Image (tube, rainbow, N blue to C red; front, side, top):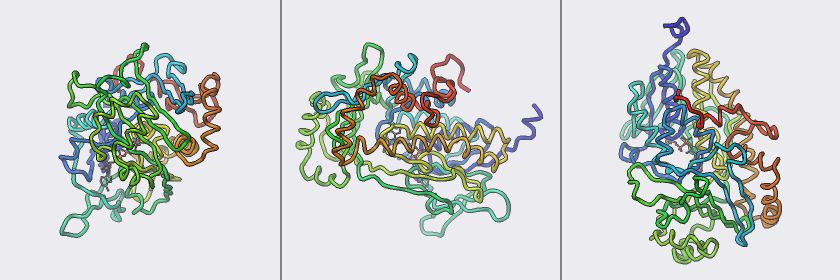
Length: 443
Ligand SMILES: Cc1cc2nc3c(=O)[nH]c(=O)nc-3n(C[C@H](O)[C@H](O)[C@H](O)COP(=O)(O)OP(=O)(O)OC[C@H]3O[C@@H](n4cnc5c(N)ncnc54)[C@H](O)[C@@H]3O)c2cc1C
């Protein structure tokens, strides 16, 4: 054993939340030899059926998944996306981007949330350093006044609050409605007026998920001003489906959330007519949608944390709990995966000394996150708002920008997750977004 390994501290780490950020953080930190306990509010039964809209994984997220050793599993279940195509109702191109125009090897993957969850969760189950405790609704994190570290607090039915720990480090990965609001940390939240109704449907005749000539599928959108947007993301299959089952498509119908009750009142057939009128190829896909209950509402909000850690309670904030955005850029799960990787690198670099590691994590992550948060903030109303003028400008200029090589490259680097904090036409180190295409063993 090297001297370096001898001086490394083994940490007891408490993780709040078993989503993408919590799972990835657990795996990376456990591989450094630390002891992990994950607290998750869902029950054991709910865990084995991860629900939620389909996700687009970008090259940067796929590179982290390769480091975690689950890339083959992801590629097995997901749909390879090579093209992003948005048309107006009249058929004018607003976005027409191919990953290969940036780097020939690159692509994205559309995946069912359950497939991503199972790939990471099964690795956690096989890992002796990781303990998963379901049914724990964490309320806050409290400093351990007797020494370093802190406690995870939760309510127990019929009794008062209970605390678990102490832990040397807490990773708060509990998503958009986080316990950070009960902690003494600065964070700001703003809600969007627009959100979406989503559903995951079998693409029975393969209209949206058949492979194109260059070996992949298209993330397709149809737009009518900024008020209406239909998104169709090829989503592959869940782990419980067989290869004979038709692949799935995630359908997103963007709308002002104040109009959801109106959609319900008008009934399913009325809604289907609107969708088919905008994109006639959806007719067969919509035949499989039997009830309005299959259209699930999702509202959006932005979260901003000036600092991504709390030194008093030895807590790092990762994923949506630190930087939720609207899904317009399709980056949330990808950013969560990168957070987990950067946090574990910082813990490793400081040999388990938590405070300097948390400082490094914050320093390395915050500018990149701010760049993506700003882009999301600017782009969301361009696709989802009540502004007519923004819609007209978008329809006039965005399509041509996709054909002009410098602006196309800028858009593609943002999409791939490769953007270097907004410095035009420069990227982060290539291995961070190309890594999943390299022929080497996972770390
Ligand atoms: C409609 C829609 C489409 C999207 N599309 C994309 C996309 O294409 N690409 C992309 O990258 N991202 C997309 N996103 C965003 C993505 O879903 C999130 O960014 C990502 O899931 C964040 O992961 P997370 O682990 O931080 O949080 P979550 O996935 O929300 O996980 C949080 C976990 O913590 C648990 N938890 C919460 N509170 C507590 C508590 N008090 N105690 C214990 N456990 C708790 C929850 O049960 C959950 O398991 C989309 C989001 C939406 C809504």
